[in-house]
Amino acid sequence: MTAGATATAAAPDTALQPSKVRWKIFLMMLFLISINYIDRASLSVAMPLIAKEFDIGPAVQGLLLSSFFWTYALMQIPGGMLADRFGPRVVIAGATLGWGFFQAIAAFCTGWIPLLLTRLGLGAAEAPIYPAGGKLNGIWMTQNERGRGATLLDGGAPLGAALGAILISGLIAVLGSWRLAFVIAGVGTVVAGLFAWSYIRNHPREHPGVNEAEARYIEASHAQDAASEPPGASGRLLDFLRFRSVWGMFFGWMCFNALFYGLLTWMPNYLSKVHGFDIKQMGGAVFIMFFSGFVGEMFGGWLADKWKAAGASNAKVLRTLFGISSVIATLAIYMVSQITDPVVVVILLSVTLFFLRWCGLFWCVPSILGRRAHVGFLGGTMNLGGNVAGIGVPIVVGLIVQATGSYFMALMLFAAAGAGLFVCSTLLIDYSKKLPV
Image 1 (tube, rainbow, N blue to C red):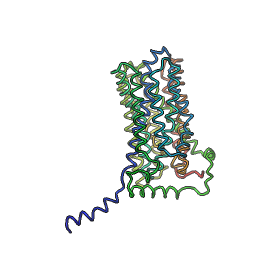
Image 2 (spheres, rainbow, N blue to C red):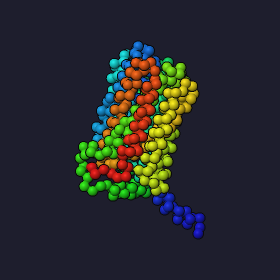
Image 3 (tube, rainbow, N blue to C red):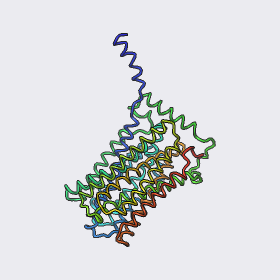
Image 4 (cartoon, rainbow, N blue to C red):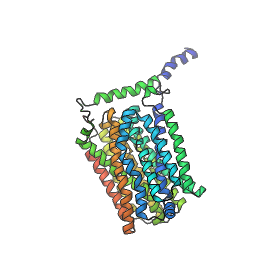
């Protein structure tokens, strides 16, 4: 056979290779969620300076750190329903533009009450991004790719927290102003929202970069999903509340976020007040901790998909990984309360986040339990539970610290959340079948 004939024979095989647009979309989601967390974490990083400028104590600081979650939680289910109704593309782009605006105008606040109002706007604007991302996972990813899709989506949380500590503290140090840092972060977010609109599509066949092979590959997986849907589904959203798995998902994500948001909102102050870190040391330590969480989340998603591809069931994979994650995170956070060496404390917090972030796999659960038409709603329901914790934990920690002058009981609260995560994720959720709704 001639070289030309060989090339001709090889061409059809090349043409049959699926394109990789779905992975590019989820890398974009990783980027957007990272920006999401840079913006929401900026207040935590700047809080020592803001508290001094506005002359506010720990209780008011806790109120400010909590306020974001009031509207963020309130808008979770509506955000998921919007994604189900209009598709994820417009919801994701609109949310990104909106929260960039509120991030930027926070720079012009002259007291803690106007700052609180901008945080309420930030929370409402950011709320739909996760439910819409969960919807996107159900649309674009196959059954053996959704673990990595979920952790790419949720991996932006620790990555953004890590980068936020470095970027915001670095901008503050260079510019000498938390206000200028907030403006730069907000404008950058608006640019990212325009980029998201230009690339994301609601369905694979709508995207100009998707070839026929990738479209068919995804559709074949969707056909398998459809075949596994229970007959006689009611279609009534409130019927989901009859099932233990939905409540396990709701409270499991609440416990996860009680621990994660507790670390996100209060660890910068904890490192500053208890261990004497200055703004640069604190930024570096928080970067190490949360980047460890990002690495852990990527590893957890890879491990879950590899294990499922080898034939393991969703139930075996998720119960095992969630169980390991919650036990190690709980033990590590308890040990933090017993250690005074600041280097060891940062190491233990990094271990906590490495294993805790395996629970980013929770973003597979809405597509496991629900039909595709309801994934956005379930994702919003799950994230509502998570952000009820986001509302309460910063306030409770602020009151604990103000009343006791210590972070010990706050750390015990985080350890209790880890124990609750174990119970909900390993005992309450049935990962083996879709719900008949």
